[in-house]
Amino acid sequence: MEIEPIESGNYDHMYNRGINRENIFSADEHYIKFLDLCKKYLPRMAEVFAYCLLPSHFHFVAFIKADTGYLVGV
Image (tube, rainbow, N blue to C red; front, side, top):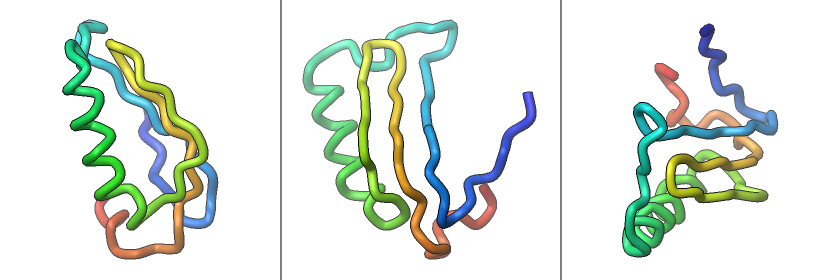
């Protein structure tokens, strides 16, 4: 599978899931901690329009802001 770089000025569908489709969120506290970290770090590089957290994976739809230096090496 080819990995496409994240480009600023575009909308992106970001997602990830647990290894072997195992749960990455097994308690309510895990969802809360994940969202707290997203609120802390994502606004620097993206404006989130929608998200969905499921026990084994998550999805984000976001607009990637102009290059802020956070996309280097991606």
